[in-house]
Length: 108
Image (cartoon, rainbow, N blue to C red; front, side, top):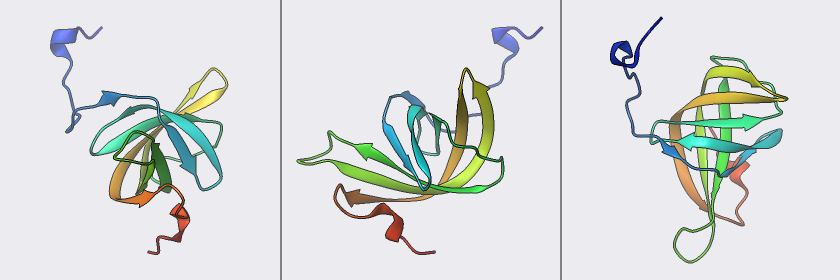
């Protein structure tokens, strides 16, 4: 059995426990935590570790109006949780969009 003193933290960035809506290409979900390098969210959609992913997070309380943080990344881990899937994704690129702009127009 591993004790807390034997646990090595591998995360490179501070994680913030925050619940934000996640828009996926084929569905939606809710974050459990977010960092500068990744996100963990829960969804009904199926994902495979190592697969690319595109998603956006709704940031409702930024500046004067809501914004979407559109992200590209890679699935790191998938876990089954009581009727949903927990998905950890590393963020490889991102951009900030006004709420009304279509997040899936990002090419490349």
